Length: 316
Image (cartoon, one colour):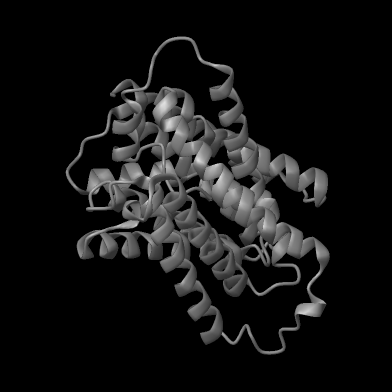
């Protein structure tokens, strides 16, 4: 999961200045990275939790990624780039708790019982929840956007049927839905809080705080009991390294660069391409079943998100 949403106000403002000329090869390469890397993180999480505890592994991933990102920022822009006011640090910590601990942490926990493809399709509803949050604060989204939300909710109901039918644990499905709501709340709040001016600095603090909180939750859950590093599979170690270095660093860096170099209308397409990539990888690599609720409900959700994103970008 990323640390932004296509409906995030600051992201939109940043990309509004992007050149509208010919799309360069570098842009297409970065976009392909975001498509594949973020789409593959659900597969990586599923492999990690096969032999690693969910919150402790998620915490280790984000603490490491956050410290590495902070080091890169200090190396490229100088230590002064990491400075932040107490208010900015507090805002970054709050957003990190919602995005990393709540949004990502619950997805990691849920994927101990929920297929990676289904998790990705449920998380794809994030733009829908952001519209709901905006409406709750007095904003009036276009009717086409609201229609997309209603259609998307119907798709979510079909996806939830996977749990009601017994093929997947309903508790896991509801956990991912809760994670997507928390992720939406974090993204929505990020556009309204005072965060560090450097987006990489803010994300580094969010990752470290959220990762630390995930470790605390893991310890409170007793995930350390009986944990034997020797029993962790090579696949899980490799998947954790991939999520840390490629998913959190490379993918996010590519995304932030795209916000400055490409039109938001193009960058936003990751919202409905990522779940398709995740479903395909889950089916091909982990032999995850493509049941009718997943195919039908997932298609409806992805189509609804496409409508929402395409309608919103016309307003900018």
